Length: 214
Ligand code: HEM
Image (cartoon, rainbow, N blue to C red; front, side, top):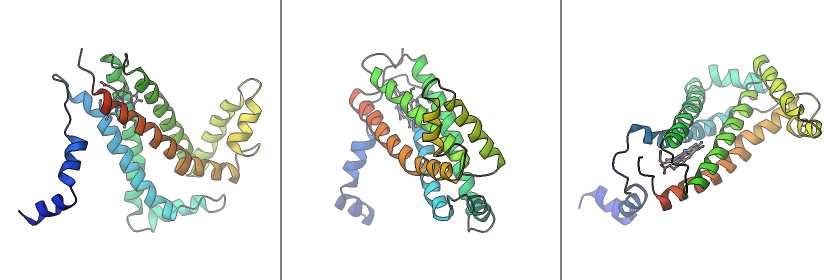
């Protein structure tokens, strides 16, 4: 037994690996069935790069913009980490769109997977909100006005519009309060909700298996 085998055996990692990765897949699937996995990989890169960014980012009205410049120009590997965060977010969005189209075309939303489709739609919404809240964190003119416009749309809902607007912005205008609110949603609330939804998504995939191609 090599030292690696011994190590894997003592941690029982081989059986764990088998439990997680060795699964039956239906015959006849193609590369389009990989996009759920690609989306998950992109999400992991997003989370890891985001953890590093949060070490240097300052979510305050006065310092947010400067802290981003500092990450970009002074922090060791800062530019790379920012790039990874931005590009993995883009890959995530493109791959969930392709993944959803694949699920739609193969009619995998039909029972018994209809609840997983609903969970998927919720994941999609959370990913979009995650992008929207992340965009404000740059705290430059473009981010500011994009948030003014985006939140104005929510504010134009009949009857409850003003309440919703105040709830999202934390104020009548987009201010430092909005920045902190969006930061909290971006790094805590939405990732937490996403983890719960992804657990449900993967649990159903594990129990129901992947649908047979048409
Ligand atoms: C971060 C987002 C997502 C991740 C990481 C993810 C991951 C996965 C993975 C790994 C699978 C296994 C099969 C495959 O990869 O094609 C899968 C299946 C599935 N996903 Fe997603 N998914 C996401 C978003 C969505 C969205 C937005 C929808 C629909 C609106 C959706 C609906 C489904 C359904 C119905 C299945 C079962 C398909 C089948 O059995 O053929 N997912 N997902």
